[in-house]
Image (cartoon, rainbow, N blue to C red; front, side, top):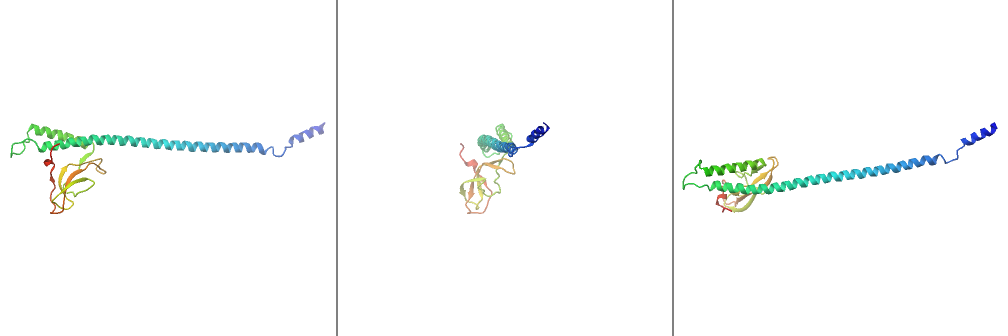
Length: 200
């Protein structure tokens, strides 16, 4: 009886070859599969996150572009109004041969509105393009013709130009229309021919 119990105990200790390795390999292969699936999910999430960030940047840029385009249109209309005020100031009524009366209420009213308009433009970072003592620059000036004058010299200003943006990096809002010297004579101070143009 005792010998039979010992034989049973010995039989229980005997393990068939290969039975231990199979259960151990299944969890490893399942873990590898889960790890690969997790890596795929992470890569997909990262791609989706990058696409979303790119979409946000493009959308924000589109909004900025549309705002700038609308702002540019409004400012160009205001520049036409500024041109009209410049013309009105030049053509203020006065007695023949007399200097303009600084106390004339009509002139004072026009000057006041013009000052407010230019203050509004300045608030929007719109500044005049200076032409005095500056050579012709195709990025700032639009040449519409030639007059006797020095080579590459601005002889006359037909329409004031403006830039927009900070002074460190301004962009041309409207180029200055100028007449350029044909190189036939020495340099001279540019004239303002805008007063000779027909009114619109």
